[in-house]
Image (cartoon, rainbow, N blue to C red; front, side):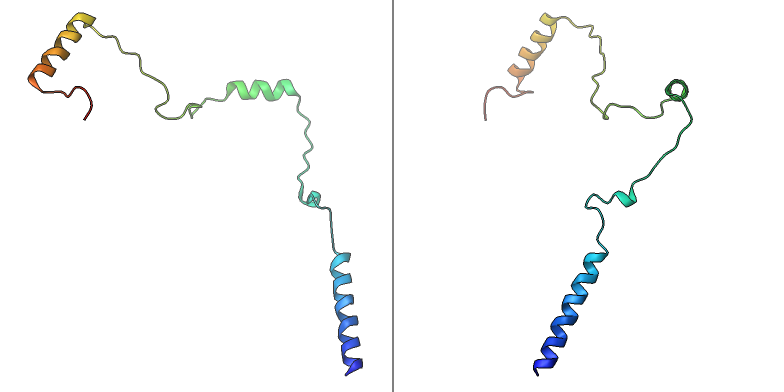
Length: 94
């Protein structure tokens, strides 16, 4: 019985030691991509300037549309007052 427990403990230590032997860097640098380029910064900037933008950088609906109103302030206020008198729109708190 004593031999079996010693054999098992030795094999467990050997298994743990073999896992430690396969350890690598903590930052996973073995998977990092390495690029070799021969183009200058000016060439890349010139190519980027010729690319046609197909997507907007603004989220949809974030830009307000320009609207030119033909009504003046007094006309709008008079229409609101009339609608409130007729009960077409609510006023105050519910």
